[in-house]
Length: 226
Image 1 (cartoon, rainbow, N blue to C red):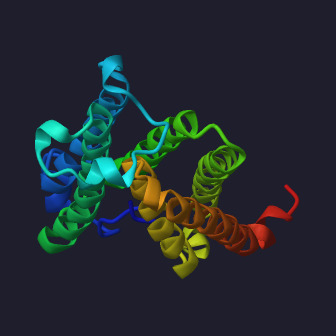
Image 2: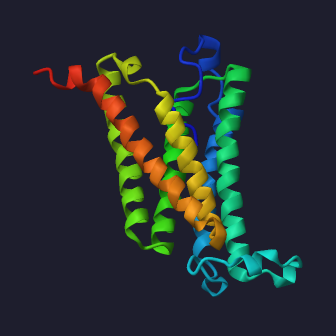
Image 3: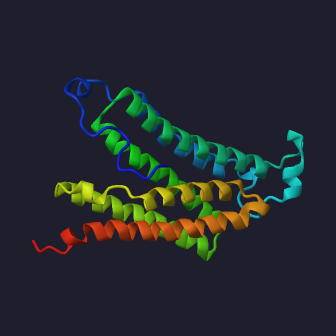
């Protein structure tokens, strides 16, 4: 999901303000939120399908017929598919918002919220599957950063200084590594597990780096008295 405060144009016209909030970009954002309970349901029900550990071996993946696929592999393929679909809707709602010039305060609020909810849900599930220090730190750092930066942006917006904490290149890079890492780990394939952890560590480093960039930009205002 993209690193942005809002993907829609900033200044709506009076004509656009009168339009329904249930436009195509907003409907795609709503659909992304509705994918979250589906995502969780696939992860945990039915319990007999198997979940998470151990990682699925390459021998299982190499089998061609659907009857040879384990229930656990099927679950992980479905989960990964839902997560990728959510990421696609994130790109599409921004694309259509720009193309159709559709603007709403509802969309500006909901789009970043939908992104953070899906990522948080995926990280919490991954921590249960991989109860180790790397995944625990990754989940804590990424979720905490999103809360902190969201609060910072809201406070800066109240001061009329929202442009001072605009999206940085590092933030976009962080999002890219984060999304790929989560996708790889959701697959739960043995041969990709190390790659997934390396990508997740890189995402954590970029997460901390991007947060420092935001804090540095806001620091002149944070240290003011009153």
